[in-house]
Length: 251
Image 1 (tube, one colour):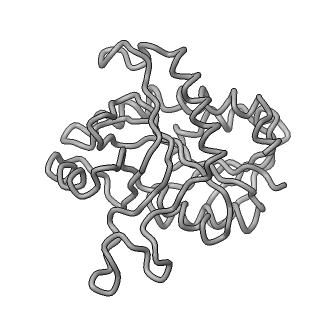
Image 2 (tube, rainbow, N blue to C red; image 1 turned 90 degrees about the vertical axis):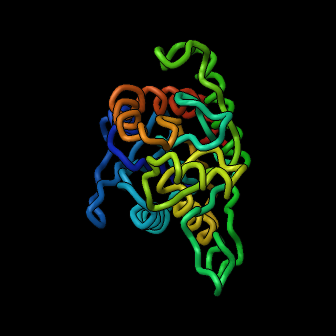
């Protein structure tokens, strides 16, 4: 079985993962990206910074599958909350992903990926279930992590994640998306493209997102603060016990 690929759009989202890789990890430069290949908490991995946006994520996913023979892909990072039940500091594990800015009407239906005949790509249920379990364990031990906003533990959600090449920081735009996609839990800029690539290659995938903002007028400041102060705490805190347990090596 090939290595597990872990991707993130920004350095802060994967910094602690890179720091925790075994000293013998190798760095391969491909298409202006560094791919770190080695062992992370006992699990063979390739970790890469995808950069922001759908094209960047799709290119990076293609490389880890084609060049590094990744057997599964996890995308991790931050997201803007969209659903009313999702709050800053919560964790969302995708059940499926879609691209909210795909619109090839009248040739195809709104949100439909042309020539694939589908709007949504289902995440791997086994990989997602293990992320949910680890995220729930993390949440139980981190009440007050987002102090100043609430004191209870972060909540863990499982549902639809919507992807688009736009950083949503407008109350009106968020409201329009909420009305158009009532079951979407959060918004981000990479997962749906990565999901499409994995679907076409037949590679299982999962997406783990932490809510940094509410996709509203304060999103820029909230996102930046969360990225600098908390992003790495969540990523390493959720993935470390999962990889150390060896369950992904057995899958």
